[in-house]
Image 1 (cartoon, rainbow, N blue to C red):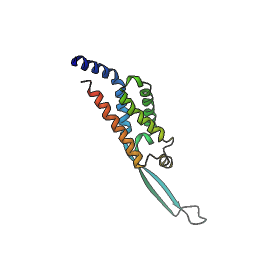
Image 2 (tube, rainbow, N blue to C red):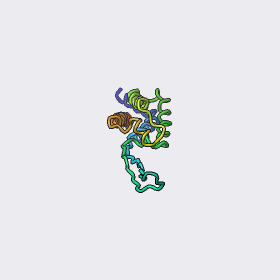
Image 3 (cartoon, rainbow, N blue to C red):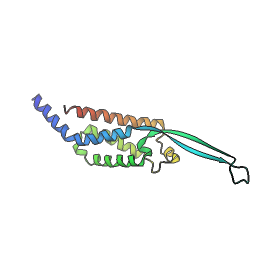
Image 4 (cartoon, rainbow, N blue to C red):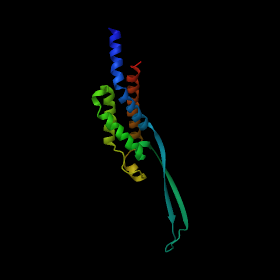
Amino acid sequence: MNQQRAQLKKEIVQTQIPYLKKLKLLIQMGAEVRTVVFVTKYLYYFKGEKEPYAKDSMGVGITIPVIVFDTAACSEWRNISKQVSESKYEIDPVVYKLFNDILSFTKEYPFPKDNDRITIERSKWPNQEVLGRWLTLNKLLREKVEEVISLED
């Protein structure tokens, strides 16, 4: 009986493997965080002069997930998440619920349409609480996906 149960679990997990691999890719993309430095240039002029008398620049570093500022990565993340969403009934319900939590988070904090500093700052993604919550959701999903994959052995 236990052997039959173990075999059944293994078969169930094997049918989920393609989706779990896609989820692992989403998690990996979502967990990749970088500090992006936006440089602002300042030119100083004397009143009435056409040429600047001084030039200066200042860099502002913002730590955010790569998919927030890399439009290609964001597009790929969205495409994969759509494929996974369409496979709701093929995936372990707990795994899907954790994945859905991430989707809900992206509805609450949408990815910015532009990758300039002001748009990204307005998106709330640079906020440490938002970033921390995002990373926690990705970590919880990763742990559950790994747990389900381990049942295959």
